[in-house]
Picture 1: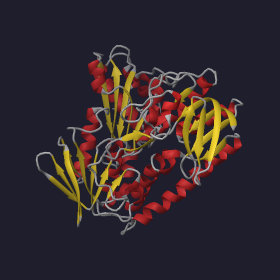
Picture 2: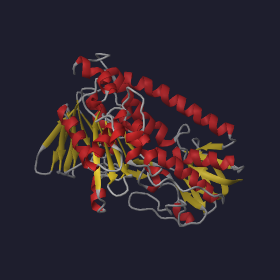
Picture 3: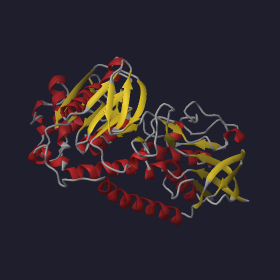
Length: 473
């Protein structure tokens, strides 16, 4: 029986960051990973694969050049599923190698197998050959991530025509049409990726809208872009049944409307991967989605020496925030001071086009009763936008009328997830409208949109910035 200062169950973003942080504090750390190689869902079925698939689709389809050469333009005329997977496997191999090197360099021990608690301080790991290994630790971090929610009424067929969000990466052929059930982040990302590949997509969602946490004006622009390129949206009706047919799948919606497609992707939610952890042996319970409840500041569960981080604790379920949660949890578990996470963090949705947001939406500002003004810039207003052939995309900022501070920044369009960090920095540093008006941005860049949007707001806010300083807009 081997004893460690900390055992981390799961090697995704939260697990890896926690393990390395603990190792740098001079502790003996063991990482248990049930998958074939380290990396967790993020590397093998989630964040990295879906973003790699997106980039491959945009490159091979010539999506970014269609503003100049027309909608029929393609870099590769006949794109296959093998074309999409080739780059994916190269990327994943590199990611795993980097992570394995980080563990080796920091002397983090790893073991492959399924972990199960036998008492509050002990786990048994079942290996591939059925061998049983027992380990004990002073503290634990549960970072097992999530698995796709698979309801009984969906006739999953092992990746033939009905897929969950993990199986879709191994689709045998690129379909001519696909129905996507679930207009959350995962569903929207995959729906728009297939649409960029000229696959006819029908997006199905029982609610009347999608991505409600995003600024509504931004979503209006996003939705317009999806409809403009032919994506069908069936919102406000529940799915009554799903059946496989000779030609693919048939989805029957509430009210009798039917959606027929060659393939179906079910992406309506995920479950915490906690079912086999034996949590009752250490006194923990999960909610109806298999998620653990933690103290938001320390990431400590109801059992003092057991912590949890990442997707298994629910919102926001981002790789970026999971990394910080893992590091903070490790520090608290080992009695080391950890700085507070920033009040505002960016949310990135890797759809086509990208969406990224930080801070308050306009709806939240109104709800709080804060007097405000907004400024908007269209990417087509920038010289870089013309060079890139962008006729769509926008940046929106919200400012307090009283303090002139930035309240929120929201972007839809090319490079949104990169551009958002300027707004994030100003927001967390309590910056004001004046920074954007007075600052000089590289020319030509899409970042100029910040100045255009700020001047748009300034023109309505008036006093506070000398008129002589305003030379544009």
